[in-house]
Length: 380
Ligand SMILES: NC(=O)c1ccc[n+]([C@@H]2O[C@H](COP(=O)([O-])OP(=O)(O)OC[C@H]3O[C@@H](n4cnc5c(N)ncnc54)[C@H](O)[C@@H]3O)[C@@H](O)[C@H]2O)c1
Image (cartoon, rainbow, N blue to C red; front, side, top):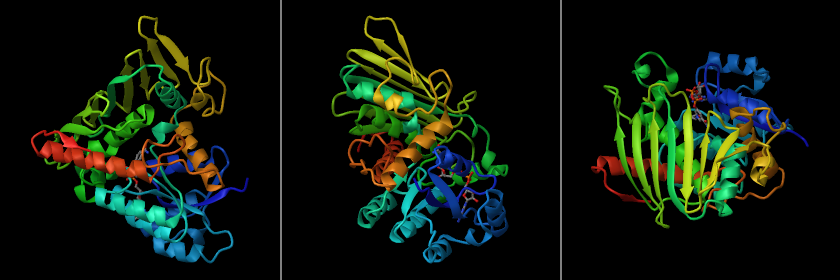
């Protein structure tokens, strides 16, 4: 298959997730990063492009310049990856979609719900693909969890517990030159949510991905424990589902001792499933009254979501990069002809879409409203 030519916005030297996107896009040899606007700093932009082997004349000063110059090339980029701080996603995505390019964008999709809704309309009008990198959906054992829940293996959903906690904002890192902390704690660049937007949306998305259900209402209690910080650094959220199921979601960036502790536990009338991101190749399954079973990536009893999402045999660990690459693999398949499975209701199995992005912003803004309103229940 001809490699899909990618442009990048963001992901310059010293950034976090841009490099992950590049690795994930290349694992299966499906994409080339051919052009980009890697930084708003001209020197760092050029140095970033040179470091990853992009031709100097394809390192552009801004998105508009990239789109104009690339449109004249026979080997022009076909899709763009957006890995900038949140407030820049909307304008870059809009421009790229309107120029006829597919977009792969990091989360949260925009910095406001209104922008996400407008972007959804732009995606629909454009006819292009929009892939949102809620990359945790790419783990084989998460996909097995989804397959088992949707097949009724745990019975009717009763209780869901999603926990995504870190500790890197325990102290005011935003005042100590940490760029990733600066924009994440600034409402103008991050949006209305702090930890709830940065990592809470991953937990919210994954809960919907594995259960096939979104809650009907929520109650949130957001806190900023670090003095001077405007946005939340800790969030406790209760969820109520139409079916009567109940959920709890905890997002925190001040939970000392936690690096990237993301767990999902789901319990039904017949059984339970438990998964931890820091031990991603394993999934615990219990049928009520039976001994616990340890299910493994590529192992016996694997569902199709598990076995179709691996690259090397059971017992050879895969992790964050491979799960991220599963989203890229599905994106490449869709860009080269497979159908786009996003339906705007239940999250799609292959890759998260703009519909998931809108749900994420709806969640963030509902949490803020609930918390500011004195912990009211808020409808979704
Ligand atoms: N999916 C995930 O697991 C995951 C993990 C981390 C971050 N993210 C998301 O990815 C995005 C980036 O996060 P990060 O941690 O890499 O941030 P970062 O601060 O480490 O990097 C941001 C990059 O954007 C560049 N940039 C800023 N303004 C720009 C502009 N005008 N034009 C071009 N480039 C510009 C910066 O130079 C930098 O290279 C955010 O939306 C974040 O929420 C997702």
